[in-house]
Length: 305
Image (cartoon, rainbow, N blue to C red; front, side, top):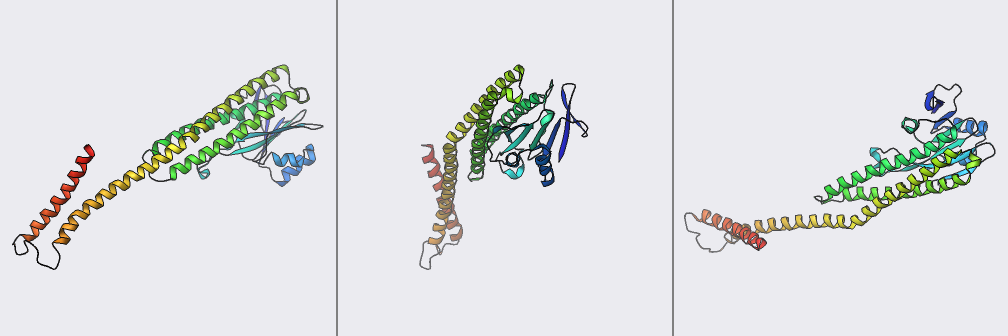
């Protein structure tokens, strides 16, 4: 799928493909890839890297354009099972057009950050800033989800919520690697400011974005450390809950065994006391219940002590 945009009145607005200066390719098919390679001389390996979720962020200076591979968080879906994934995005900056290639449709230009834009290089920087904003949003969601799972674990006796926490911990590791990779990209962009065509204002914006990315990385690191340090405690909570349940079930089993023993003793095929008594059945039943309640009384009395 292809979308076309123009910079009109300092804003990025979608157009129908006439004189566009920003083109977005969403999961391009083979025909669209061939068009990008043949029409714009984009390197095939770089184009594949833009769609490879395992590719690291990087910048490449070509003869007629600048190629940037950026890490961005993937939109969360239910089938991800509490695992937040990371994907790649390619930006190819030419003199008169910015081509963006990504694996899934992200609402990039819906953000309020894409205002007061006049140049394509500035738009590219705003997209980098948008990726940081997306990472911060997902980190807040991960923090809230981990708190909810922690509350459920406090009363849980199964591993389902623990596995969800493990998935979140794994996601935070991916996020740290992706944010750190973007940080390396920004440092390289500072080296090639003139080759890219950045102005003084663009360089200052890049410095601000670098600071925000560093703060984003530290926040992801804090969340990851907290989640990892609390994992052993939460595993112990689940084991303790299970032990408490087993203790209760054991006491119920013993309480049932006490009247069973009384009834079994009076059911033996030998001479027993009160066997000739007219109310023998009720006497045995009363003895069984007294024994059971006596056991419960003894147990709870010991617990209080």
